[in-house]
Length: 147
Image (cartoon, rainbow, N blue to C red; front, top):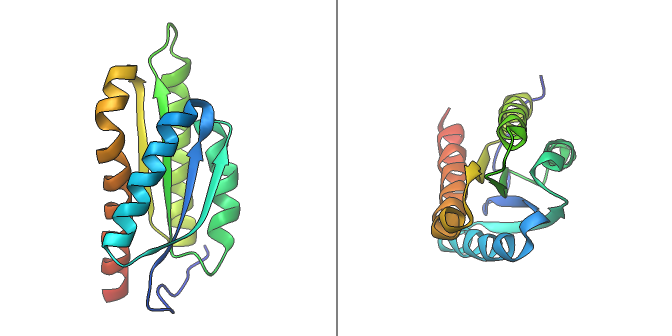
């Protein structure tokens, strides 16, 4: 298990990974996440767009290896479909992200809307999901600093 010493530098450094399958929505989420990070004195060090939510875990693993990254924020939207594909994908992606968080000892704020969300629900939740993911990651960093 890899453990890191968090916050060797003063300003928390966050990477964002966004699934661009719904590019316009994700761009708005990235803007909201960036604003939230700035309001809390954090820096967005990297923003990486991947094809969709299913592609996030591999890239997340590589990003978390970077000792200059303190936390990760993942943004996406798994829409409601006619089959259970999105639900299965959502469970797999969330599980792997939780495992990576424990493996690297770095917080991952998950701002993936769904699975099973409609476009209307995604539009209504995009800002709060993005801001909430950043806030959760930063709160976890603060707790880790005290442990």
